Image (cartoon, rainbow, N blue to C red; front, top):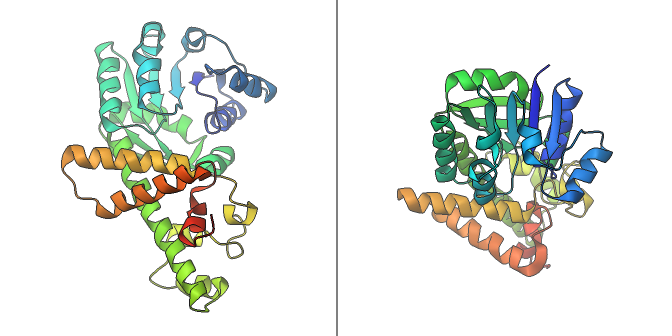
Length: 296
């Protein structure tokens, strides 16, 4: 039975860890937030208060953390993962962070003889709960082969993107596309309404035409056409506007660092920043249609 230390038991991490436990892995969870540990314990997951106890004797350590600074802290600080990981342990970071941090932590792990993967996910909380996430994985092929049977217990698609940092690169590019597409879909529905075209008819037509995309067919931002979309539950989040803004900012930082032109990505970032500044950061990212329609 593979022993797994799982660090970060928030909205994404807890259901991911629970799915591993359900699959028969020996999972021990840790979070610095006491309330998160309490929720995990109530859900039946073994938890410990100290990070070193979660990492001790673990064959794999999986992290799901908010951002790059937390990843650096958890892995690189005195008493962190690298100080406590067993020789031969495989480290897997599922956080969405900047490529520079991902590669820096990879290098530090390699310096101590430890294999590491960056493996950010797509699918949101619903995907984490349903074990239907998509994993975009960067790192050595041998480490990927070791991790794959575990990642497949949390997701429906596990793709090796390439060497260290390319998992994060894939996530950043994917979510920039998603943010841009969602805004375009919202604009189209607002325009259709003003032109007297019903949302249902626009969906019926565009979902079969060249305008179709995931933001339309699987996550439609207006109530009705896609019953499972957040629009039908007052935009309670599967993926918050705050998280979309974080990812779009990562994309802009990365684009600036490498000299890539991303004008639509920049505009999407600005629009989500305005939406968050209006106090709507906790809504689902598809709720930006409220701002586009002038209904905040």
